[in-house]
Length: 198
Figure 1: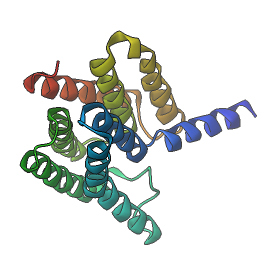
Figure 2: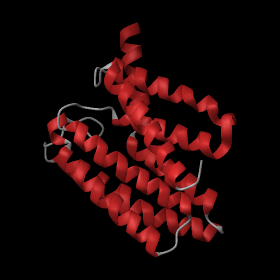
Figure 3: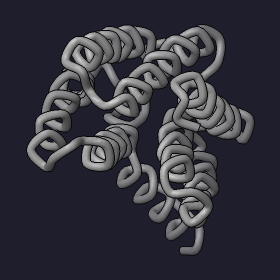
């Protein structure tokens, strides 16, 4: 009974704090934090969701329905490469749109960080399966700490919760979860630093 409850909590954690929802939270948070008006924030949010989240999510749902992926939030390492390529293409298009349309700097930095993460994780994926759930939640926590300082440090607990969930479900090893978290934090900090945001 206790094991079943742990699995249920781990599953709930993984499904609620999934990479797509975390991406949506980051986009909305940064758009409303940086835009000059609510209308501008809504505009950037809609553009970035349409260019980054919707294409990848739509393809994942299609592949799951076609039986070519295990599930929306889990997939075999060898099946991830095409999704990384799609995510990289979407992030590239997002960067171009943001730069050409004069978007707030923090949105550009975020998409550059996202593109950098896709390239690095895709390279790692050729020989090892890194935890994207842990990476995405760590990226969100890192952005929150950069924006709001150590008042946001309480959210660090989400990283440990997600790491536990991925280990409990046996989707990742401790090393895969830890590497996802460390790399995500490092990429966000380095890119934001290069953009003068840290």
